[in-house]
Amino acid sequence: MMKFKIVRSRFLEGLKSVQNIVVGKGSLPILQNVLMEANGKELRMTTTDLDISIRSICECEVIEQGNSTLPVKLLFNAVAKVAEGEIEVSIDAHERAEINAGNAKFKLAGMPESEFPRLPQDEDAFAYTIPQTTLKEMLRKVSYAASQDDTRRTLKGVLMSFKDEKLTMVATDGRRLALVENENEFPKDSERDIVLPSKAVSELQRSLGGEGDVSLLVQKSQICFKLGGIIIYSKLMDDVYPNYRQVIPRETAEQIEVDRQLLLDALDRVSVMTIDEAHSTKLIFESGKLTVTSAASDIGEAKDVVPIKYAGEKIEIMFNPTYVMDALKAIDDDMVTIHINDGHSPAVIKCSIPFLYVLMPLRIN
Image (cartoon, rainbow, N blue to C red):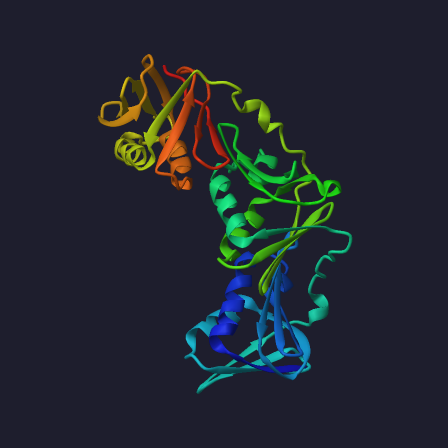
């Protein structure tokens, strides 16, 4: 049995934080429920899919402390429909819930909390602290480059490397690679590499806010992120991440400076002719200008010209335009530098922060 009162907006925000990972029908019924624990002056709400768990902690008035589970999607939809104000929730010994909000009343059938999977414990964990904004920005700068291919399981995750007094984050799908670094002090004995699953990356990007720090508690097979009133637990991938450094060119012959937004706009315009993955965009670097072209057989072609700082020989190279645009959207600088050797070798995009993006060229038929 349990009973509590809570402000609707606070209740709704807490439910919103935890409901995303709940899988649909076909899973275990208990995994479609939210574990609700009312104790002291707070309500703790937890969901899990067995790989990742999310807990939200909200302030409330606890009339009778207790634990139970309710269908989270139905509960969220009910709370979302009522007017702002105080909501009273009472759950009896048979896990039957009654929700009163103004003149509205809902009844939901729950399940006992004893059936809900236990959350991982975070003893003997290595602890790291990072500003929330820093972690969110680092994930934004690399996560898009992770593989979407289920057969390349390891590459679907994001590497987090705590070494040499910095956090290095890497994502790659084998055709491109994004890397960003940030200085971070931590004990020498806590140096390690971990691979964060894609689902955990998505939840972090959704949950990370603007202010305050996030605490990372890392164990051998799991990680816990504590950020304000939200706690995210995730299993770590046990695969060894590929040696990403070997694909980063050590030297490049040419460095070309270009306005990031002008190049992004030009790629966006000409990519209308890139009708499927078989088509590509050609970049032609010449003294003082970059010509961007795309063509689709028997349909049409597009061309745009962007001024650049370059005085070398003519270089023609083919890229998937989306891959180039992804990196440019992740960079905040006005100007970027493209490091290149020729039309057949990987190119590297850099900016003023410790970020780089390696891009494999497409073959020219």
